[in-house]
Every structure is written in C-alpha cells, then in structure tokens.
Image (cartoon, rainbow, N blue to C red; front, side):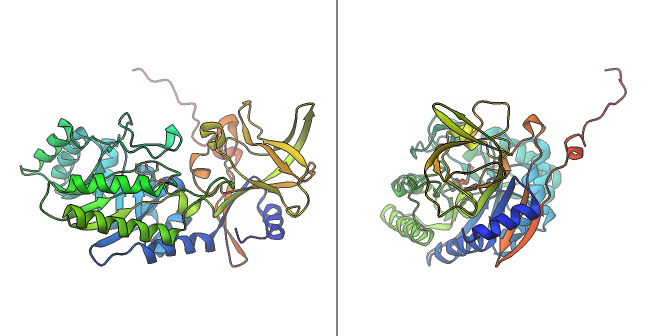
Length: 418
Ligand SMILES: Cc1ncc(COP(=O)(O)O)c(C=O)c1O
C-alpha cells in the first residue's frame, strides 16, 4: 500500500473510523497488469472484474473507465453497473439461483451474456427472452471437480458444490439439446470457477485441460471462461503469483492445451475479484478499551465482524500495524477484537504489535475484497465510509451510514386483512 502512515492518520481524522480505504493507484496498476498481459494472438481475451469482491458506483466507474468487462451475480450488482452506464455487452450475469425478475431486469438492459447454472434457469431465461423478443448469449457453468485446496466454503468446483452442472450429466445434455429448437438463448461457451484465494497454478492447468477436453465435442470455436480466484497476500504465509506472470502462464497453458487437444476457441475469459481490490484496501480502526487477562491481551476496536466477517467466517488471517508506530519494536502479543456481541468477533488473534493505548489507530491490511461487500448491520452497526486515495488526494466514494439509515426502511403500517 502506498498510503503513508501520516496520511492514514489524517484520513482517520478527516473521515472518522472505522474507515475503508482504497489505494486507487494500486487498483489501476493491477487492472493494467491484467489487461496488458492477458492477451493472445490466437483468440480474443477478456478480463471481467468480479464485482462481488467490492461493488459501489466509484469502483464500477473505475472498472468501466479502465476498459474491463464485469461479472455481476445479482440484480443489485447489475443495478450498480447500470447506474454508472456500463456497456451491457461487457457484463456477464452469474449466480445459481437468479430470480425471474433479475433475469427480466438483465434482459431489459440487453445484457451481453448470462452464465447459466442449471437447466431450469435455461428454460426460464429462454421464455423471458421470447416474451421480450430478445436473444441472449449463454455460457454454462460447469462443475469440473477440481480441488483448488482452499477453505471449503470458498472452494466451489468440488462435485458436491451447489454451483454448476457436471459436464457428463443428463442435465447438461438436456441443456445442449435445448438449442436444436427455436431458442432465443444462444450457446456461446462454458465457464468454470475452481475456488478463491488459489495459489496453485496447477489447479488452473488441470481446469484448463478438463475444459478444453469438454470443448472438443463442438466443432465451432466457443468462449472459454476459466473463472477467478487468484490469491492475494494477507500475511507473510501467502505467496501470490505476480499478475503479469500469472496471465502469461495461463495464456501459454491454454495455447498448449488447445494445440495438444486440437481445439480452437473464440474467446478466453478470466474473472478476478479479490486480486484487483484485496491488497489495495485496508481498514482503519480506533482502539477504545484494552483488556489484559493472564493469558491474553486485547485491543478493542470500533468495528469488527460487521465490517469484516472473514475472520469469523473462514478463520481468515490478516496483518496490521498501529498507525504511526509501524517502525517501533513489536513487543506485545495482542488480539484485535471487535465490538460485536459475539465472542468470535476477533479481527486478528495473537499478533505482535508495539504497545498501544486507547485512541491509537490500527490499520488492518488487505481488507479490500469481501470486507465492505460482506458488511452487515448486525448489532445495528453502521457501515463505515469508503474513501479512495490517489496521488496524495482522497475522495469519499461511499458515505458512512447514519442511525437514520438504519431505520429508513422500518415502517409501522396499518394492519390489512390477508
Ligand atoms: C464465478 C466466480 N467468478 C469469480 C469469482 C471471484 O473470485 P475472487 O474474488 O477470489 O477472484 C467468484 C468468487 O466467488 C466466483 O464465484
């Protein structure tokens, strides 16, 4: 992160804490590294930003300005894209249980592609497309059984996963026969996503081999989408692959697999989320009370699982510093605990930090992905503000929620008979 500790202090003073911060320069260089290196002479390529990692108008505007494509998984994420005038041709709609109204919304916007998860969705989508007099491209999400060795909640392509169809299933065969009639859905290719926070390039290679073998059954060049999930550095234990290198390795391997299996494709897609925004984001908290018991020391901070559920949900690990004391000796073993009424509300357990006191700020690094987007109002916590920082300037992109926001949808309507 290129934001200095002095700037962190100023940002906390100006915008309050907890505060989500994004280093826009870091996001831009990451996006550029993907766009510059995920290229082939043999087929078109596309990099989709998986907006579930972090979606707000400011972020999707940046993605649009930089020329990326977009992956959305809900009517809400699609709405954000619409709000910033995203080119709908470049939007891919994912999800295992899209509702009729979400599909209608997507088709009414002339969305480019729907990534269909199952046969029922295909039939529903086709009906909606017919009713609206539209054609829509579809990719099929396939479950290819590749174990990406990540936490089981974020590993999505094991055979028991709720996502996608098995390539040799009757259900997928039924989907393929669907196109022989007068369908308004247009078959464009296949998709897989093997998991998140993946470091093993071999897992992607295995996925590519399997997907290319599946593509062999069709004679026309189609689209191959090999998903996202590229790992980022949360702590020193994580060793992410450099983005440019990763892109080149993926492209080279796809070339090799296509050559070996005598298959050609029209387009290759990837859909990184976390790796675009993860390391660019951090969260600043203020320490309130501290607590010492014989076996443990706590710093209590003014946020917690409501702004970062990942430690409680996946036992995710993070690094942090005391703002302004990053170069002081880390002599104290402490646990950074949130303020929610849950004993599992611990942001980082047993981390070495310099002595700190009430009023000091803690910066937790790499909170840019699935922090804000998974935030909640549990305990009626208000969602923190989001600020982008670029070249020494700061810009508010999401306002801090107020207590009024928390009850804005609460009504005390008159009773009406059922
Ligand atoms: C289908 C699909 N694509 C892309 C992603 C993005 O993954 P990541 O943010 O780990 O890159 C996900 C994450 O769940 C996903 O389910």
